[in-house]
Image (cartoon, rainbow, N blue to C red; front, side):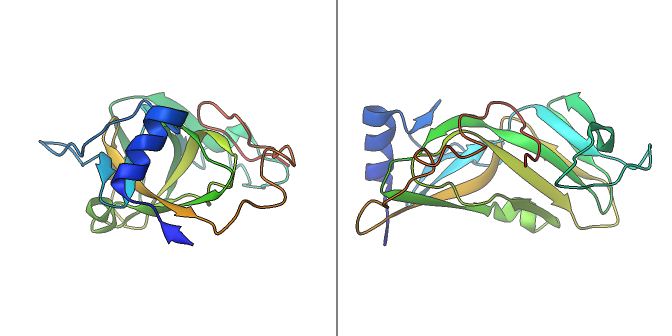
Length: 184
């Protein structure tokens, strides 16, 4: 597997619509950076948040997920309660090529504040908005800024395409839009 450079990312975004909307160069002036970097793409977090709370004593169960577990907010700045987390999504919609696997890593600016971003790999031929999980590992409230950089996606090109892609097996998160909750 090879990690793909900025020129490949730009070409695939323009030619194949791999990332929409697409920012060709990294933007950093007064914001947490986003856009193309040397070997990745720094995606932005959209202003839609699902903040987890224990107001109704709900149980978090991935097989029977209750919407009572969170409150929804549309805002430019989301406050994550101490030792809690929020679900959000990328501004960008991704279309992953058949011979590519995408790995996501959190931004160092957030990591240095105790905010961890978690995303599972984007599999070959998956497409959609990426659901992001921001965990606040600190004992203090923490801020996440909408429409600014949230995480970096790295594109790994395989030696050949897989026999079965995410689209071929009709994956349950295919084509997701907005913040998508767990599905069974």
